Every structure is written in structure tokens, then in C-alpha cells.
Image (cartoon, rainbow, N blue to C red; front, side, top):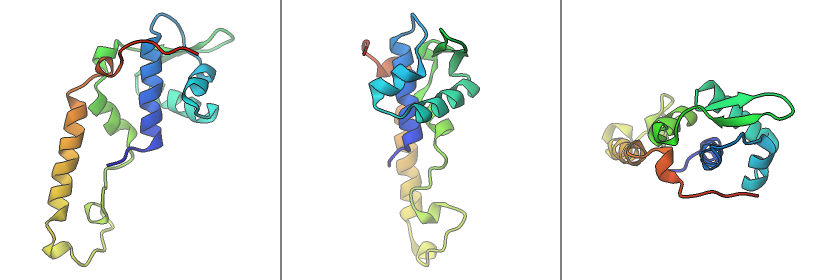
Length: 136
């Protein structure tokens, strides 16, 4: 299982904001600390703000902060919201053209593996993922 860069970046943005709950964090510093383009961070921040994870403040001294305590952000829910789909193999999708599907048990195993993968994150919050602060 591999998460998309969007989910990876979403986790990083939220973790960095959680490490700096005492102030607004900027897109520029988040991009720099994570070596991610400013455009990618901006896209992620806008999405996380729409989903209610972040609260933004515009203007010269603007930035963003968490919209809730890190212990209220469930990682499993976040991953489900940021991943476009969990189709690990073709046969799990609606456009399945695999000739082996009628006699294959792999889809059931894949579904169980995916459920176990996400269940690990369901058991954790953003607070569980951080242990301190990282600064520039």
C-alpha cells in the first residue's frame, strides 16, 4: 500500500501545524521545512481548510493553524478523505477487465489487507504522531 503524495503532504502540514499550535504557520515555512513546492502546500492547506482541519488567516501576518486539537484529528479518517481511491489492484475497481477474476481469491485478500492497514490509522490521532517541535 502506498499513499499518494497529497496524503503524505497533508499529514506533514497537519503535523507541522500541531508542533506550532502557539502561532500561525505560513505556507512558505511549511514548504521550506518539508522541501515541498509552495504550490503543493497551498493546495493541501486549502483542501484541509475546506475539510475543517485547518483555520486560515489571510493578510500580511496571515497563516494557518489547526482548527481543532491534535487529539481530535483521527488519522484513518484523514487518510480516507485525502486518498482518491483504495483500488490496490485492477480487480477492485469498476473497470475490471482481468480474466482471472471469476476464479481468483486475491480481491478478498486485498480488501482485508486494506482494511487492516486503515484500521491501524483509525486507532491513532495526530497527537500520537508528534513528539516535539521542528523549526527552521
